[in-house]
Length: 115
Image (cartoon, rainbow, N blue to C red):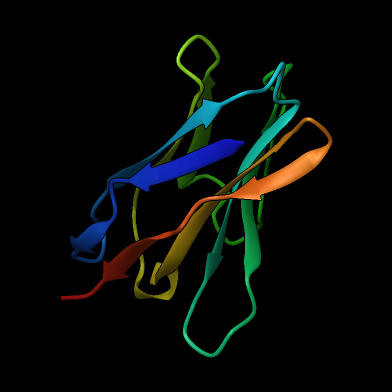
């Protein structure tokens, strides 16, 4: 079993910053991929950022230059630093990891950007 627990969401004003964390626990040998997706109300879940075990990263065009994904392999944590937040970034953010040939998901953390 693999468990993912996200934290760091909340309410922030436009232009503000938040850092999301996702702690992965359980039984696994490696995590080739760790990433974040988000789902806004009445919209489909969309890719935000991903990072490979080689530290190669990829971002959605909408967050490039504002968001940074990183991982701590010793602690099995993936982070998402979000700067210059916009109201359009409001969504539930989900962590996901690929390990043991399976993709696992966290429960999600709410991010609300509003004045």
